Image (cartoon, rainbow, N blue to C red; front, side, top):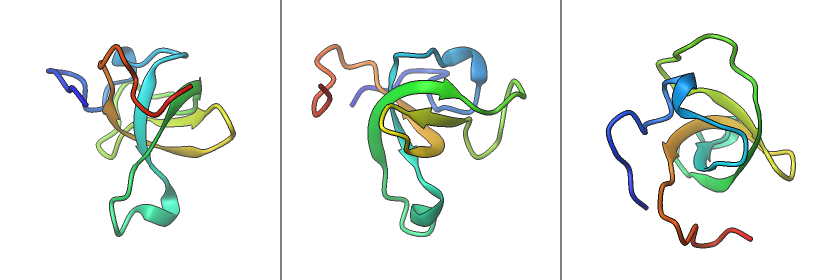
Length: 78
């Protein structure tokens, strides 16, 4: 996983549909477990959110973005 400046998922402008991201689902907030997927829809309307922008991944998983993945190989995603 490669994260750069502005790639922490708190800014809506750094997210695009089709990007690979790690999200934390509501049920996993205590453990911090992340789930990797491809953004299908951006659900948060505000420009920023301190806990991460909420997105829906392909497959229907909803969570807040913990990291934007910039690794061109997108390991673990098909």
